[in-house]
Image 1 (tube, rainbow, N blue to C red):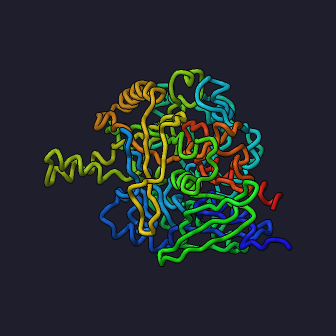
Image 2 (cartoon, rainbow, N blue to C red):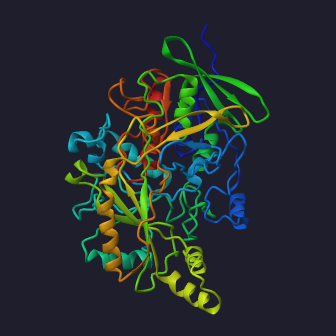
Image 3 (cartoon, rainbow, N blue to C red):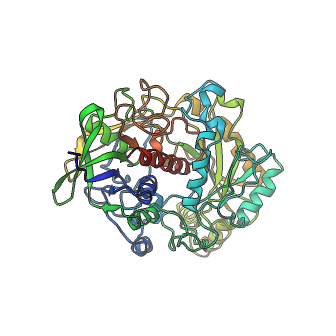
Length: 529
């Protein structure tokens, strides 16, 4: 008699990666259950929370922070033991952290995926760019990516690159005045500005309205023009998938022949549930995925689960230009300077990306002036002037995987369900530190090229919220957690849909790559179930 299962596939996590995997499986006729630790909340409520909040700079504040489903800014959630305060802005709710990402949708370039072979540092992916390219195209269609295929995304001013088999589904938005002026003036110094492909639609698309330039992509797009994972949760449900909220997975149960037999989850009411399936997809973010595996004592024959944690840890520059640029109109970010994305220098120091931020700077300017004792009519005059000339550059560095940078279940802190929270150890390595003087030299050039006055010439190390490496992909089960299909080496029916599989970080946001890998993974599972 055939064993009865609760579903063909259970997906743990409802963020962009898990939701896309769930939709593809449900669309292909598979029975799917999606488990989400957090709750479902409508967009209007998040927007109202943001409008009513006094914490405008805290992008997690408008979202639920439940005692069993914490946002990462909850002080108890992450216990840092390294010198770097690793605290990325992760959420737990239906749709996940893409509710407040900035929608950057870059592809890795071929050399990013062969870093060890090309430059002798870091690790290679076990697949190459051509293997993933068709799924990049499908991911761009799923997210509604607006971009131009006419630029050399290496930042070297050459022919269009990387190779594409399909065009972007949507045309790019118009350039903001800030972007135009920085591009024009800094181009004379040899800096190559590249438009950022992004998942903010420029025309009605998949039920989403065209972007209206509200400028608060972070913490929430008020109209839903920017993609968020709840889009594909809803698509998956319409295709037949079942969503269960308030369902925190805490154990994967091992069965016969190395297969995973069941997942156990707990609700805030204390209910414990065991669900069986033919296949399991863990699609929590890059900290929670390894935590679940470690608590379950699965997928870790390599001892690499939770290790090799990477972010694009970066620094920033703030200055006043000699002309009004009016930062704060249009999308919150639009592109960057990519001169240091690829080249032989990567054998010596990290790749670097500089991105002008485009948030409304009034609060930052006012805080600076008040701290300097500026008051009354002078405060009003200078606020108007300096807010118009404010420039904020956000710089990121390529990270290398290190087994010492790791996340583990915290034995000393538990959430309201009695489930361990997180302990993180993270350090900035010499490869990144060697790139910092290069970035600082660029900062001096930016200020000089814009006739600027420095406000902050180096913010110190900052989080960039791009979690990678913690369940690392590779060709060898001795030093990797998953193979090139995102299948765990130890369990043939356990797959991981998380940017935590990324083995070489490059300098671009990994979300599009994660979605492409998830769709590719779903195709693999659908053939086998």
